[in-house]
Length: 114
Picture 1 (cartoon, rainbow, N blue to C red):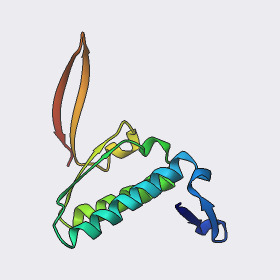
Picture 2 (picture 1 turned 90 degrees about the vertical axis):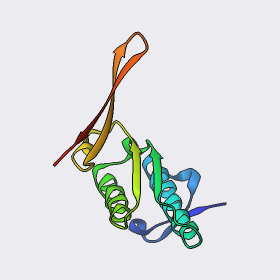
Picture 3 (picture 1 turned 30 degrees about the horizontal axis):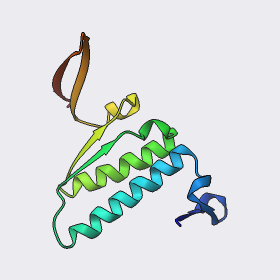
Picture 4 (picture 1 turned 135 degrees about the vertical axis):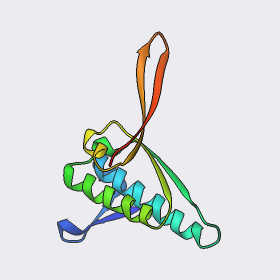
């Protein structure tokens, strides 16, 4: 079984079932990024997609997660993030926005922030 070490709680060892939703997301994100880095030793993984989970994070944890993703992007990799979290919109420069139109229709548009 996996365990997490809570460094901000005196190195307390905790089972993953005791983690909050935000903590679980951060652990999952860290594991995914670490595994992609290990896999990249044999074959370059150029693109990562992350589907949601950011809404469970407090502002400090969200900032930490975004810094990690930005560092990977600076290595030349592409990261696709699916999210509804408004605080992320200012930090993601290229966005694909899907807007509901009703009756099963949507409009897809790309925006590039400068």
